[in-house]
Image (cartoon, one colour):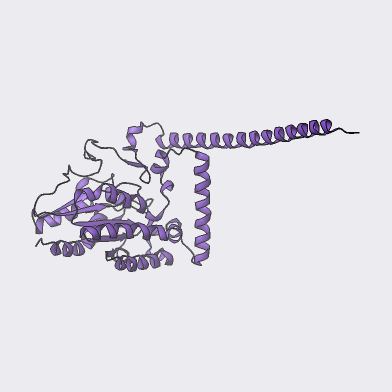
Length: 343
């Protein structure tokens, strides 16, 4: 016959066994999570070593910055950056009276470290204004290599607006819709608290992107078109935020859309999705009250060969390409300058 005492002892024993098994299972799961975290940390360290590839970290000419920027240019790099960390002349935040100040935001096309400073489209525009309106207009270059639309918008809000611009010129490239951590420098400088959770978030975002593209029914021709499709709300949201901030300050926003160079230098290979998104971007910018300058119709009338850095680079123009960009933008920019009272 089982006594009440025996029954109580049995229950306690079973309870201890159950707790022990639960603790063992929890420890096992925790061990697997820690192991996965270690694997991703080792992989991140390997990636950073590959990026450096024997170079000193200072050779990256960048340093860590808060999210969503993740990195920025090093300041005071001789012959390259000013004291604020931009590839430009030294600038004061307070502008001279009667001067129309144009600030330019963009990615590596605007910064383009591989070309002499005076050959960039920003400087070509400055030279044109110096000829036609001497001493009345200045252009400040805030381009940062690898930045996407979210980083450019954040930079504009956090730092660029402190320079009291009269006009904002935004260079928007086909690959500016990419996820921030897709860019090599952002991935290099990003130090998440948990690499495992960061990897899960990135994979989840990738799956959401695939579903968004699938639901659209469109067939993107490459990564840029895919990113434009799946991150369209992010792109429009960033532009909308910038347009709102500038409306509050009475400063017009001019956005020029710069396409990638086509495969084989054949503009017929430029995908239908990319063309449609250019058209929709123009419509959205007009809705925001911004001025849109689409360079796709301009560039597709020209042979890309003499305008690009080389055939292995689908993004960057050479000196002649920068001149074409400046010539295409100038009329809209000149009109905006005249509306600000400089004639």
